[in-house]
Length: 255
Ligand code: ADP
Ligand code: MG
Image 1 (cartoon, helix red, strand yellow):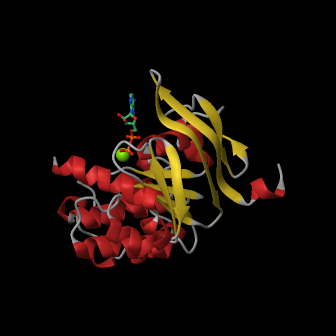
Image 2 (image 1 turned 60 degrees about the vertical axis):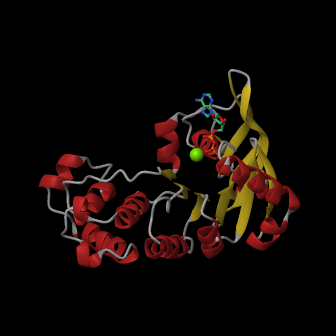
Image 3 (image 1 turned 90 degrees about the vertical axis):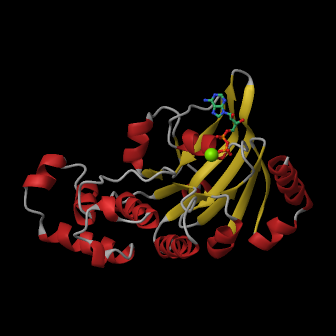
């Protein structure tokens, strides 16, 4: 392993994913340093979700490799890759609605120890401190004893991000976390991701441009399964190729 590879959390070379000959990802090259917060944007059908599916092992590449912390992920299945330290948040929240906010976080902290331990065992002091810290981070301390079913959509999103963090992944993958959220909730989720970025490597897939502006340092634009361009939000928004693919999409939506 070269020095250069070791400093990268993700390194993706010439990645192609074909579905019956259709290339959802087409010779994609992507690389990200440890500790980076990266936003990936692109019009519908650009290959964003497939990109996450390949990193998490849900879909195997037709060609090319994904290296995570210098290790080729090809031989590993989805569960093994999750255990290696890649956590994924899906678009819709997957929290236990009949449990309280605290119980959801307890469960996530104790995944390895099993559900029985969490529900019937006494939480250790360390676990309690971890959960209290997580509640603070996600801004849900005042709602800790509330049933998750009673949370707003945005609060559920934050709870699920907290549950992901509880499993201490090295890399967090977050798919469209603010879809359907109010402006205020969007800002809360943005601030949470910025706080987590202090100590995690994060990939956020996003559509909402305002939100991207709030959180983005480096933006990668996907188009037809390839990297169209990469840079700061300003650079990307002024790139004629980006303007063209986004305008094209607006025209389609208007039609
Ligand atoms: P995005 O998330 O950027 O909207 P996707 O990664 O979901 O894009 O999809 C990229 C393209 O690949 C789309 O044209 C989609 O129809 C196609 N695709 C995705 N998954 C499959 C699949 N399992 N079988 C066939 N085609 C697929
Ligand atoms: Mg998608």
